[in-house]
Length: 253
Ligand code: G
Ligand code: G
Ligand code: MN
Ligand code: NA
Image (cartoon, rainbow, N blue to C red; front, top):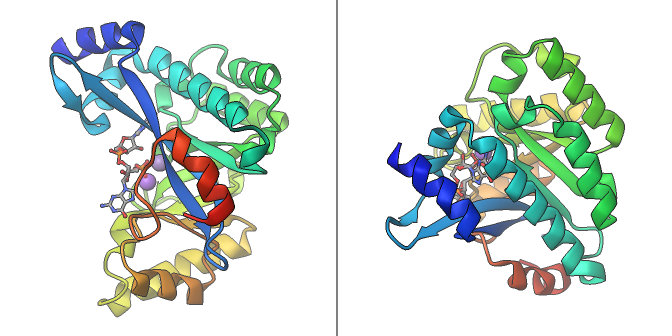
């Protein structure tokens, strides 16, 4: 409750900002997208990690307002990078309550229009939970988003649920393979086999594959051999401030 009240205040006071983590093409290491990650420096609580405040905001419903701020800020920043960013895309985490809040798809459309952003340059990261819990309304929102032309990404893939049926029911453009699977691929043949299988499945369904949490050159090499399209993780770059992004478009992460 204390975090929630402080967060409500923080939104008004402008205490939140976004960092951007590079996602590069495995083949040439060029920057393809950045994932927007929210940060909160509170004058009273200090730095509060999103793992602590996002669940609280999700619980209280404040995540709808917080998420709207994140989405707006990411779109504003993408437009502000201008031609320097080329065809760079931005990927934004969307919480379940935000996705199903009234008017979400209309809000997305409005942001794209007002900033003059091509829809395929915005990717929305959803978790499996959203697709499992889906009711008629979620189905309609996802259809509307598809129609607008934004890309849909499945975050933390492999950690949520065992049902894969939603992969055929919804248009999913990108699978983000959870970092828990990537950690062991250097040492553990079973992990390597599992990630190889996920990559093949995604490829056969026409999806883009992003490996998350890539921390070593050996992992990056193994993922390249598997045919995984993109890499994200500390071995490429930590999340960076917005003003560091244009140079990465030109010179690499
Ligand atoms: O950036 P970091 O690794 O600390 O993120 C921790 C968790 O917080 C991750 O699960 C990430 O998806 C989530 N997160 C970060 N930024 C946002 C955001 O803007 N919205 C939502 N819903 N989750 C976020
Ligand atoms: O749940 P989600 O995938 O959105 O979480 C993204 C989080 O993962 C961010 O908070 C980011 O800081 C963190 N992260 C990104 N790259 C790495 C990495 O290589 N190793 C570890 N341990 N965490 C990472
Ligand atoms: Mn994410
Ligand atoms: Na993830």
